[in-house]
Structure formats: structure tokens, C-alpha cells
Length: 109
Image (cartoon, rainbow, N blue to C red; front, side, top):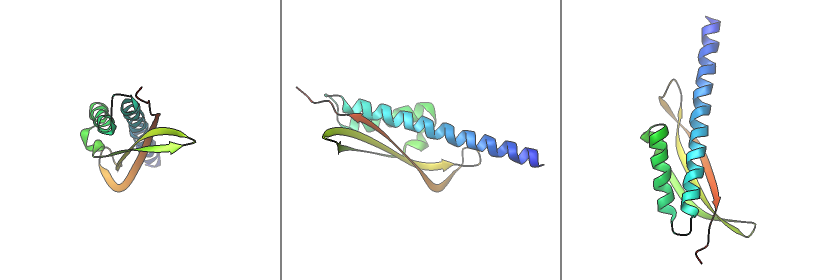
């Protein structure tokens, strides 16, 4: 019985890490897309939502926000994804999982 519980706990941890890492990759790709000179923040949010829907489920892409951030004299695009933490399989709880992706903003010449 202890072994089954340990196995399920490890399986759950693996699922949470997979979802987190996938969301980080989607947010980073959305930020890179929005940072292109001919794109805006809405394009990055749409790209992030599409990638999340393709790789996980569209319900993980409900809380996407983006903004411009200045760090060390460099303008960055930040895409933040806030979603539920997947516990007990793919059922979520109210505690949030928040990840961000950043990219350097290209300037239109």
C-alpha cells in the first residue's frame, strides 16, 4: 500500500513538472513572437494560447497576460500564464500556477 502511494505521488509530481515546463516554453515562445518588430502584445498572447491548446489543453490558457518591462535599459516583452495547478490527474485546484516568459523587444527601424 505504501509503495502504491509513493508511486502515485511520483507520478503526480511528474505531471505537475511536465505542465509547468510546457507552460514556460509556451510563454517564452509567445514572448519571442510578440517581441518581433512587426508584432504586438496581442499577437504574443494569441500565439501562447494556441501553443498551450496544442500541447496541453485550452483550459490551461485562460489566464494569459503580457506587458513591456524595462530591465537594465533594455525593453523586454513579458508573457505571464496563470492557471490552475493540475492535481489528481488533470483535475485542477484553485491554487494558481504562474509562469513567465521573456524576450528582448526588437525595434522597428
